[in-house]
Length: 114
Image (tube, rainbow, N blue to C red; front, side, top):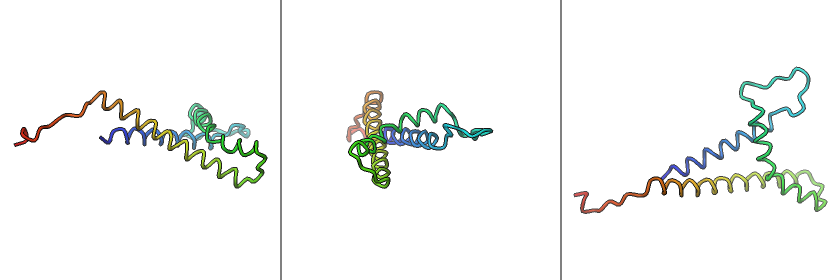
């Protein structure tokens, strides 16, 4: 059954788009700035909120008095990888359970194929 994989991949793509949107949005725009046709404040806000868990490793390092920006960016990248893996896994298993509940596997007997 491929549907759960496609559903989980689609959710991860939507998450990636929302994160990209939040990075491209001008939170303090310069005078005269207008968003592009693909930019939405609602999606940028959702992406900003969804990016907060990925920032946790960097904030933990900052509390431990680590001042290296390279280590901070690596921690943020690690946080994003963990967030995507957990999102994919959670959505995949929920979609798998829902697909099994809605469409139970059909039992085909070999004798009926002749």
